[in-house]
Image 1: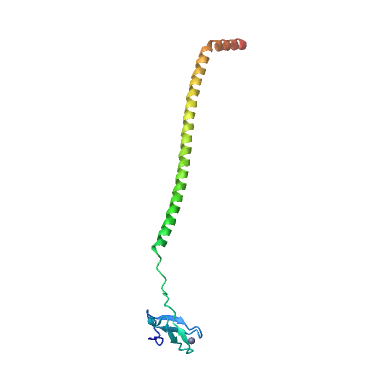
Image 2: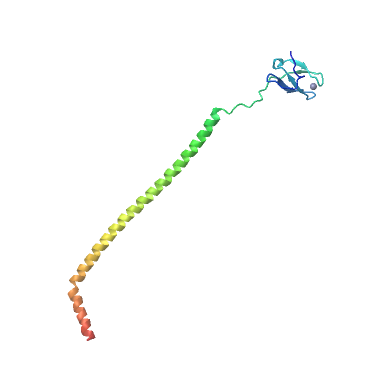
Amino acid sequence: MSACNETTEIRVCDIVFECPVCHKSLMVDEAAEGLMVDCPGCAINVIVPPKVDQTPPPPPPAGVDSRLLALMSKLKELQTQRTEISNNIAARLNDISRQMVMLARLESSQQQMMQEWARVLDEVKPVSRAAGQTQADFKA
Ligand SMILES: [Zn+2]
């Protein structure tokens, strides 16, 4: 076994662990994994633990996928709301144009009634003229 705890520099191959008795930081070669070494601090035999990978694993693509999926579902929600509001607006516009048509119809029937009114007035004109004459007679 090649102990490399004399060196201050931590090599990639080194296993860094703490002595369970004196809590001294021990560095041994990766090859010493599972073997007994003498602790330089308290001279006790300690078993070298398995090497722990200190570098955090890179974010898996699945994480990116789930973020994209979350964004996609939010976008879908937004689009659903937009469609709902657009449909509401379209329905209201439809309603407005229908009422405009109804208003136009009412206006044209009002015009017809006014024409009818004028015709009736024309028919009763002699009477009203007579009434006017009566009034004139009254005034005279
Ligand atoms: Zn120790």
